[in-house]
Image (cartoon, rainbow, N blue to C red; front, side, top):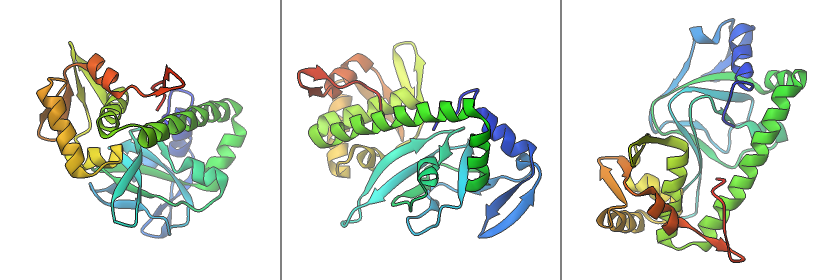
Length: 245
């Protein structure tokens, strides 16, 4: 979940009390998390499905994605976490095994704390716990909406809705333009949209020709957000699905 002022209390707690950190399969006692940060390079796997969830991670810097891999070896991006987000909070609270990979999609710096200490902290602060519950509820609703976009939309809508989601999460507005502050290759966008890389390339080129977006290297600049939203709209029972993903 994404932290705001209330949930930042968790990070402050991690920093100010003596907790144990987990690195290279060894527990380390550290009194100040700011004195030791876990660093992962872009492309490095942080968690795999076979890993036991003993810890909760908080992102200090960079971006992390969760994804699954199908029988053909294709990745489907499930979520992208930005700084101050926590993972895998749902799996840890549910006390179940994870079925997903968590991978650094940029160079990242993480804080890490044992699950039992995080749960103890949440139990001790009802305000933070309630805020977390609200955010998990919003996230669940958003995941359900995104699932409908992935299942019911065509390739053009999939690409457009994925870009809209990136604008909402990582967009930086400059006049009428919005720059997505997350470098992505065509393959990255394909993984997020649930289409092949070839299909993603075709649809992105179409959007460029229509002057809806502009690509500069791995950066996507949205030139016409209103048109992009119109392209991405998916209707259910004659009503457009909300952008709650």
